[in-house]
Image (tube, rainbow, N blue to C red; front, side):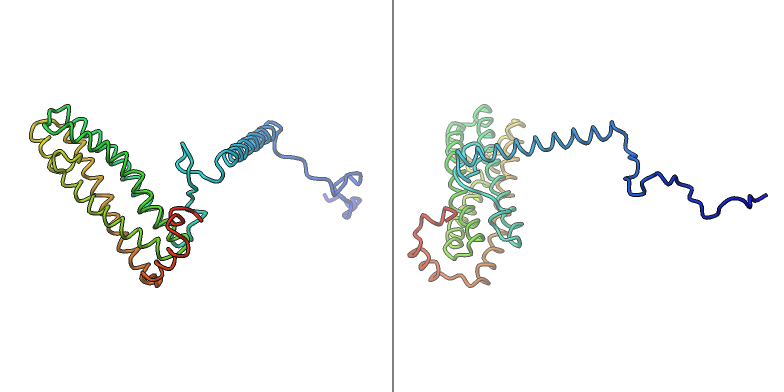
Length: 256
């Protein structure tokens, strides 16, 4: 039976309780302690990264490439317009494929020499020369100019790229063929290795041939795309000459 003597307006909470107090914590102390320790570790990691960056800038300025001995500043997210970043990323990846192919090509030539190839010594010497020479020149003569071209949108960069990348495409075809004694572990040499039963050398030659083909076909594809962009942008030989007279050739391999 209902209690008619009970006050229906009476509060169920004590009048002594502060209604503005924070609610009682539901998270136990162990979890909170774990979170605090994780935050402290994150802060220490960030502090360490900032200190390393400050030390790097003190020693090398903003230069960050190559990582083992910084000579130039290279940062696609910071320097390339957003619309062009995917293209420059692909070109940089193709340059890395080229670098890897040069290394594999040299290793394949070592295996050719061990397999008893009559021109193995010449091939090995040529492959070492390619690795030493082509690696930096390809970066400076076609990758870096087009990187600067999209960063600054100046005509001369594009013409430098077209000229030297055109030569590189011809060089790639030459390396795919694999003429003996030329330092190339391309098709001809690879077939000879398989025919003589030297499977390890043949497999390495196949990998090198695929590498030459991939980076060559990739560059040919983007060459056409860049040519269309340069035409649409209105770059001309006259503009390139004017820029060369104004800035000088040295500026076209730097950030300035």
